[in-house]
Length: 304
Image (cartoon, rainbow, N blue to C red):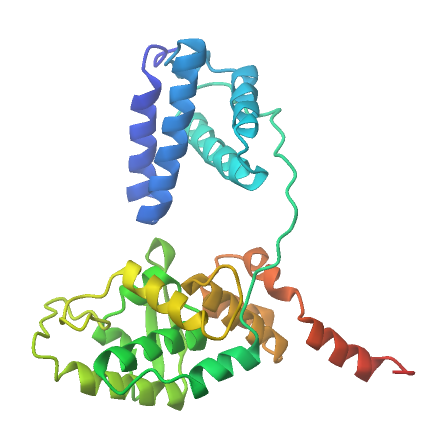
């Protein structure tokens, strides 16, 4: 074969460029792919003393997956790594870099279906109605961060990258730049608009406010907000009203979708609001809370 003596790492670099510039994957996704493939390559070199993609076969890949399992890596994580390999080999076939795909006979480990965790409605009401965030800029900003996640379902990266021009107060909508630079428009309520206006009023009074790129959320020093600050904010305030083990921005995204669905929103509408590329990603939210099931049961059963 023409490319027989090219090494695996050269293919990986070419693959990463494909993901970055053609598929336009997010920075975090590309890092995950790089780590998975670097780990795979390291295993091949250590265990089989090869670094040539043509020499990799089904048994070697299977051996790698077994080694991951022996290291107590969960099936969900193994499946993610396997998904990376599948995407990689699909690329190699497409580019005529290899002629056979050794993943053809590889089966994915079974995983249990996990329902997304979410904050109960009464707990969210308690957080937004009863918790004192304070009247200063930081308190107003932190409450708006929580409201922004809960009212829109946006991702952490989308919130951090919001710019002033993305907020249309008169039109009651926000423009969000999602994965692979896909734009979507999310409607917002008068309540959220009021919070946005209060935040902007406080922001303009910051002594050190100087955000040349016009990012919407800033620190109390006037600089662009960063992910770690948002994580700390969410973890701190959710800890006041919820006993959930994980308290993250993504939990509020799950909460948004679950509460919308439980209150009658159409699944396709939720798909568009979340920015999912296909409905299967949204269907995980079709679970119901036990309270919702009790309500349905009471209304539907003739002897309830």
